[in-house]
Image 1: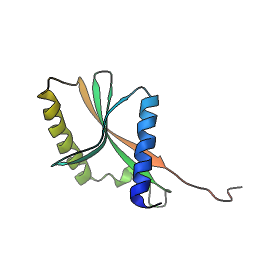
Image 2: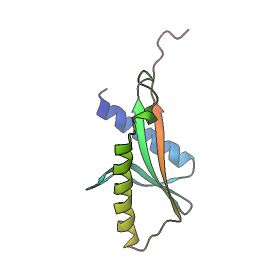
Image 3: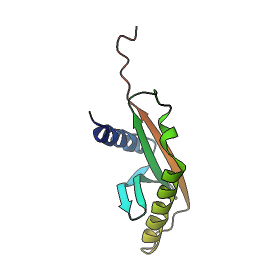
Image 4: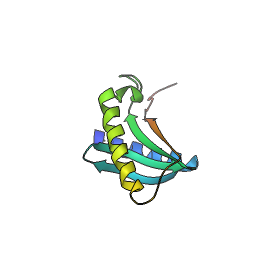
Length: 112
């Protein structure tokens, strides 16, 4: 499985977990000139911009550690443009949240 396939699998798992927690998935892989947002989800009156990081192991640290300040800036800018887009159609969220979901898929061969 290549990195792209692993990332897509992680985003699918993350979306399902969010649904089970009562979130509604608004958009996946939203892109605009500022960047990409993996998942845009709503819960109550809040809107959540979710960055999904998937890894096969923890050899290079936790997946969330790969979300750099530069990546956060791109997500914030993309979210700002998204919010302007939906506000022009009359939707105003109660609050916004920037979330990270970590997905680790690790096969512990001969673990015991």
